[in-house]
Image (cartoon, rainbow, N blue to C red; front, side, top):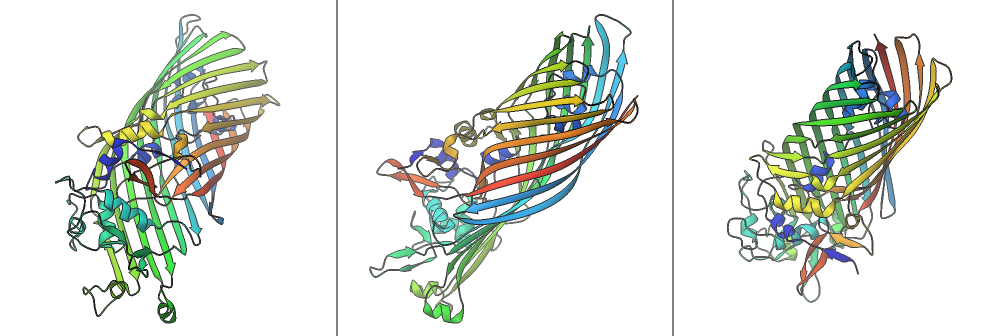
Length: 566
């Protein structure tokens, strides 16, 4: 038996908003950064917390800025090949995208004081960095078996409440007009399902009797749901998070380096999720005329927002060959605007005839669709997790170095508020339940073959911040996740690994070129809809189980950095 985990927050969220709203999965998505930066930084796995001397370190440990002994201008471009592969109940699908990116541009200014002790120099820096790239597309499909999304939607409606009365939902509560009034007091998820014909109710004034419209009466006149014969989903994501860093650092006696960074972040993200189910031919008569029962459930969303953060860091140089670093990266405080729309539809052959319903005696088939408005949006505030970075580096003579960073990110501290600054207690409770502190280990090495030519290698390994009960297991625990609005699909991370190599060549004392190749591997579970959990005999029980697909995203990235020192 699966163990079921429930919170009272679940009840709050079932009726927590008539409008589309933010959720825990959105908070997590915008709290993640990629391993990104200059080619030298990437080729050494991003392990620069104690090394410094690279503009990408400004956004992790800004004390690294004080390592500079000259001014510098740097820019980086890259070409990425993003491959996705899904496995859903034994059916595999893949997709591929290639993208050109402008990753960063930066300026570092060095201002020596002329002192041999005390404050030896000041450094200032400005950089633009693309810290997260959302671009990818994946497909997933399966054959017969498993629950339908209509089973989840009907069960969700049966557990829902009217926000104005606190009573359980009826069909009359969910019935909308052609204008699809956005100020209804019910959750939009069951409202869209009901108006598009995916679920129905025998008595629209009676609470809690919703069911999937894809079914038939058995010999005892009991409504039996049809088995899904095929399901597929196409998800497309676009956008990025860009950061603008303003840094300041100082060198004290070549033994201590102290720095600070103030950052402005910009989010631009859009996604579409196209989901379809096919129930096959309803009966022989339907097969002869070529009708198949089917549904679609499509969601579109775009988000943009601006945030701010700060970083503080120190590097100590106790000996000539050893450097130690520690840095604190604050949360980013975002204000985000979410634009959304959704549409759904159902075709059921002989639905009204089968149910002997006089609503449509001359048109017994059900062919309905419904759409949400396309000109509405929500605004909310997000605080991402903070991070500590502990670093060490060994300088091995004149030609080699090794560096290690370990990052600790507290994802339980993610926090959501509405536009007016009021805490979203239900979502924040789920964040604390479903996420934990995550560690990321970065390792890098460099060897100078000649004074002009260097080779580099590195890697980074991040464990999943998702609690174990979020990950699918046939014998493990189960929780219900609440995506925002009418979106039902979501992903759960397992791990992210990076393997990196690179080369550097200095043409003159002032001009240099670095190249890197980064191979990124990410594994996730993709749920087309969440598990539905309710109470049976006062015990939490899985009412509808959702079986996810396994998604592997492998990205190969080639990076080129040009730098000029003066």
